[in-house]
Length: 316
Ligand SMILES: [Zn+2]
Image (cartoon, rainbow, N blue to C red; front, side, top):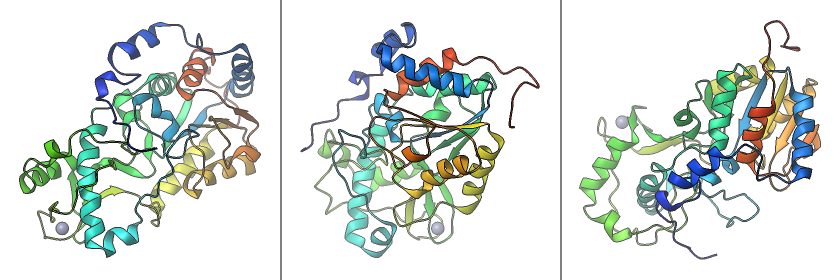
């Protein structure tokens, strides 16, 4: 697929009035009876258990952020860490695309799926949320206990002095170094979940050096070829260990960074429910696999799951 232009946020499904109209409808109205039956068996399995939730890009597609591993997605090869640090031309290209992509991503709003998980947390149904998404939409929706497994798109780190910067401050620097670039780039094509926009004219883009030491800046999320920081992985395992079951939503579990938590839960006898359109690498570990729209399914579960009374929760 060549770039079908990404419309502005306000005209995307899940934004503005469209999103409002949908959340006014009772959860599940868009589900078939077979899908509802599947969800009801998940409710039976999960009722009374506190859940650890693992989310991936499929959760944010209803917020207008494409999932490059989803069934309808464009195959895409994100830049590796080694390419980023090792090749200045690639790095310039990366920052140019990220600069345009960031301006699109920050206009995205949470959808019914993000809101359902925030609501489930407020009701005490979750031990917490592990997300592979860097878009921060869980936090924007009100989830408090979130582990951003792969980092977030709104921070930038210096690879030399390790100072962390707000992405907005770096955007101002880039703006000053590249006056008029955003306007010339116009409407980006596909913007990937890591804020990589489909922009071709990147040769004269000027990269911002670290404002503190002049070193190399990098968006502070985990690239392909990089490892998730150890403390984040350990906190995620602890979240799964505290839970009675694991719910994985909107991830094809292609990379080990997420799959390991599914395996870990299954190995420890905790039921795993997977909600994802299309096969996942975790399907063999799932007690229940549901091929349903992620935001509809989460809204349904949020309404159907009963409260957990004090002392009632099992396997904590
Ligand atoms: Zn620095």
